[in-house]
Image 1 (spheres, rainbow, N blue to C red):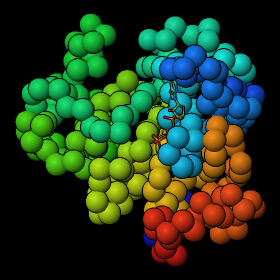
Image 2 (image 1 turned 180 degrees about the horizontal axis):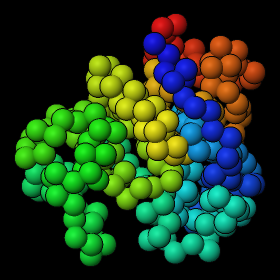
Image 3 (image 1 turned 180 degrees about the vertical axis):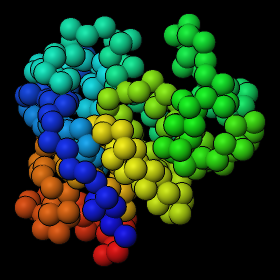
Length: 264
Ligand SMILES: Nc1ncnc2c1ncn2[C@@H]1O[C@H](COP(=O)(O)OP(=O)(O)OP(=O)(O)O)[C@@H](O)[C@H]1O
């Protein structure tokens, strides 16, 4: 089933990039243009996918959203407010990042979900709390797993614990960098349905960097194709995959190492 149909389509602008550019100094001391004239809007209730070859600037773009990196030029708005004016710690609670490789703290799954509360100096919710039940339900993990040693969980389960840990802070935006790179196809499909479910129920803006056309085809609403730091093409994902408007994107899709999108 195509999970696009499950979405309540959101229309509120949420994260807006306006002519954003990033330059860095190379080890040789020359200026390198990493991102140039990046403008797009990621809306609540939608999944925005960022796709492109290695080194095209995808991770840098997503890191700008919670100020792990700052733009050299341009403006990034979160619900209309320039993120440069928001305290980075507060911003990162609103804009949560889920890393490529799941990171588990020592201890049980429950203790991993309680961590964000301890970081904030707040009494953490118990195993029986509605808060823990809410996030377990969102990421489709059974409550009987709460006592398991988090590091003994499978890669797919750890990825969902990662997501649940990001969701306990009630973020408004979720950033994911290559969330399926370490997963097999069944776990990828499970994560895809989980992300779609979270986007729908929590009405979040989700931005996901991916090489995975399965993920793009099944859950991404708005797709951005990056090449050498530029947006070459962006638009409705299903339309872009069906009918690329540029030779560059068409070539990217037909590279032999890329699995063709299925029609399911
Ligand atoms: N702090 C930095 N200093 C210098 N160059 C950087 C820095 N961060 C990123 N780059 C360069 O910017 C370019 C884009 O990097 P980025 O990690 O955003 O690409 P990517 O599309 O996410 O790549 P991949 O798919 O391989 O993870 C690369 O050439 C990288 O070497």
